[in-house]
Amino acid sequence: MSALSTDTHFATPHSPAELREKKDRRRAISLLTPGLLWMFFFMVLPMAMVIYVSFWTQTTFSVNSTLTTASWKHFLSSATYLSAIWTTLRIWLIVLISTVVVGYPVALFIGLFVRNKTLQTALLVACVIPFWTSFLIRVIAWRPMLGTEGAINVILMKLGIISEPLTFLLFSEFSVLVGMTQIYCVFMVGPITFMLGRIDISVIEAARDLGASFGTIFRRIILPLSLPGVIVGAIFVSVMVLGEFATAASLSGRKVNLLGNIIVSQVGSLKWAFAAVAGVVLTIIITAVIALALRLVDLRKEM
Image 1 (cartoon, rainbow, N blue to C red):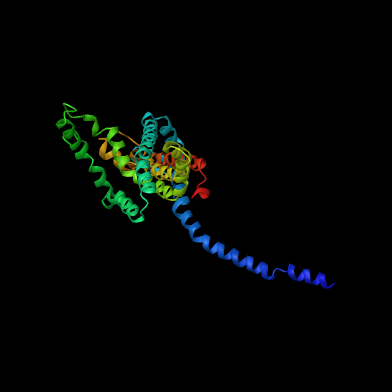
Image 2 (cartoon, rainbow, N blue to C red):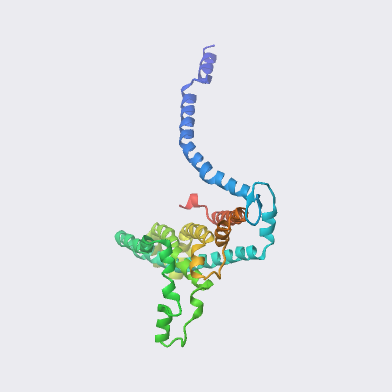
């Protein structure tokens, strides 16, 4: 009888264990609520509104809330919009590859070969110095560099490498690629440098003592351990490049039409339904890219 009484006592909802569990649950809810509310009001709700607007009825000079799929049909059947999707994906892929090619050696030098923390910090600060100026200034600064009378053409002509200015350097897809690579390369350098800085140098020294070449060390040790940094950098670069419009507008001479430029153009023309459709398509593309990147590496485990 006494044992039964004791079991009943511990089974009551007022036991210390259950009270502690309820208290922990309330604390967890109180900590989660601000973040969940922020995500709902600034992410879920705006995205839901964009999806809703994409089904509005769009006319030449106005838009009303009558639901229709006309904007979607027009977008998916228009050669202009489909070409913008392809151009966006092509430029994203080229810029992603170029930022890895340019950024990885820089990160390798800073994160692995420079062991002095003060010097590492100074070099990383040097990488972000361009960000002390306006984004548009950094973009437009390429015009005097790439123009027919710009610094690059003048130097090449004085060296006798070319006899006349290269016209494809500016107001072309090439100039957009150069500008984006320079602007977003630092977002690849940072994460890779962080991962390389975590590599125990004694592991590399042990591999070298065992006769491994630098190529083998890089392929078997450095690259696998730095891959999470490459993935994080790829996510940063992808999100920003896929949503780009200013660099293309400033450096392409309207010859490169990205999805971001489509959205800006449609909003400026008060064609909100078309702009919303382009925004939803762009969001789907970005989400797919991020999901694919996260499947390659488990960042929660690696970081």
